[in-house]
Amino acid sequence: MEADETRQPFNTEAYAAAALAQGKTLDTVQSELSKRLQQTQRTLFSLINQRYEDFLGLSTSLTGIDTTIDELRAPLTTVKHEIHEVSNELQTKLEYMDSRLAYRAQLREKKQVVRLFLDLEQLLNRVGVVLKEAEAAKDLEHVTCLERAAVDVSQIRYFARKGSEYPYVVAAQQRIQHIEESLLTALEQSLRPALEKFLEQCTTQNDMDPQARQTAGTDETANLIAQTLRAYSTVEETERAEDIMRTALVRPTVSHVLGTQPGRGMGLEPEKFASMLGSVLQFAKSTCVPLVKSIESHLAGSNGSTGDKLAVRVVWRELSSCIMENLPLVFVPGMPERFHKNYREACVFVSEFSHMFSLSNDSLMVDPVYVEFSRKWQLSAYFSIQKKHVIAVLEDFERGKPLDAARGSESNGTRPSTPAPKPQVEQDVLQIKHREGLLTEHAARAVWAIQQCWTSNVYLEALAA
Image (cartoon, rainbow, N blue to C red):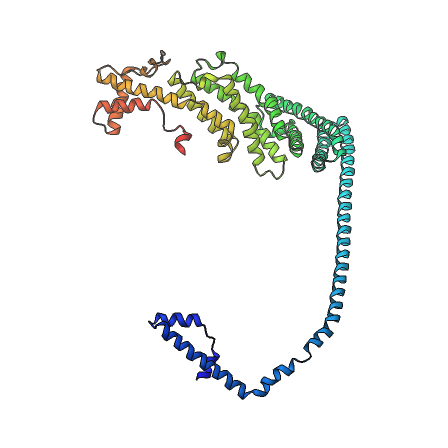
């Protein structure tokens, strides 16, 4: 039992701490430790006596160990030097291989640069030849040559961006710019006459059915326009093409329709405004819709996105911009009744335009020009004026004054052109009172006054969110 205890690891500090924790005194702990020391010594002596021969052999087995170590030191040192030599040799070879690989990488990069220069020079020469071929060609063949040139110019731009830091590419920039300008000029000279031709064809053949219009050449012209737009898209110049379409196709007719109003919108009657918008929609229906549909059919893989973009970014932007430019006072609610009717006509105009081109839900609403057009209508000022009108109607009732349908415009010093007769107004108030189940005429007059401000079939974007 004692021998088993002595074989176990013994920690003096832990033993003393445990004994003190049990309430033993230092003398008692010291006495126990002394007894354990004596016990350990007896166990050691007993073990030596039992295995005395092994104990004596410890000293004899170590005899000559120094000589053995000295004998091994020399070959071990030799092996160590050999290992260092091999390591140094391998390191040298690795560094040589790294240098060769780096050299090969440099050669590969230089080869790519040379290939870039050769490809760029080949493209510059080829696009020059193609542009000359385009000058000699006409109509569809001319546009086909411009499409080929547009593909080459797109690649030229890629190579020029990739090698912009090399002197050869820098020196070729002027030549590249000249080719780009030549291509864009040729595209514009092809697109603008085609648009004018299409507009003329549609203007002179509005009474013909779609099939007859195609046989008359509009479809061929639309195909020419579509291929030209594809060339613009290849060189990432769609905004330039859209601007040409706005100025050559949409602006002339719309400016003529809206520019006939003297005073640039001053005192514009709702009937006149509705007639203008109707003429604009008729133009869009007879000219712009067929063109957009034809372009979309000729550009395979557009999935409707091309038609939406053309309808919004070309037709809508030019229509709304011309309205804002030529009829600025239509948006001012100085005459509330006219403003009210004109805004209703504008809402109908937007709805019919969207339906005419089968626009998706958000394609028109997110357009910045549409947002500007919506904000142009000063609805907050209009409702502020009509609020005063409602208050005035109720105050007149309190004073015993008769209800006046023109009261809303009197605050601005104007009167509507055809105010409702007073008996009819009183009759409308009585109908509201019975229909809504109101108890007092005062409440019926308030409802009547509020109904003069707006109608439930008008879309208000701020209230729709």
